[in-house]
Length: 266
Image (cartoon, rainbow, N blue to C red; front, side, top):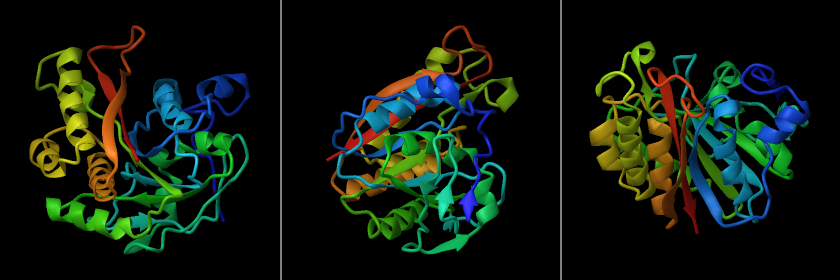
């Protein structure tokens, strides 16, 4: 069964030179194994996603995407996976593998409808020789849930597997019902998000939980904390690399979204 490319032609071009330009990256290889990456439309997030695939560890042949669920209510505190065997992209199909090595429930519809997994698929297809697994995570009752999610995932991740936490950072403005600094305070939002990104890079997930969970509009904060905890368990070194906002290039500074890349390397 194939997961269809629901957002091609909407959140990113369905093909052609425009998509090629957005998804272009220099596959020079590197030692990057895990990341927090944005899942906005590729017009906004493409540059940040490309940066990860250009330095992806050359030993990696499988990518696990951990994402929030925007459209479906899913069970809290457990991975929601899917039974797809392939995923459609404008560059052809990518092999998909079930993530059966963790406690999970299966909800094909939730994964099929989720843009937070799809935005990475054109890059995975263009990279070549990569398979993919999908897992959604919902809410968490305590930081202990983050620990348990990371612990269960750790046994699935070897030297040939990369992990992406799919997360945009702060959604700011009246449209999002979140303006703690006042109207259009982009610089303060970027400072706020940079602090969160640096805590994630350092594996300080309990501090992220106490400071940001339930108090911010970072939409993939559970995936981000899970991967941060996992990276620390694997002894990877994290750093904050790129950031952008939807207001870049003259966009609306009163309603915008902030994006950061966090990379973990061997």
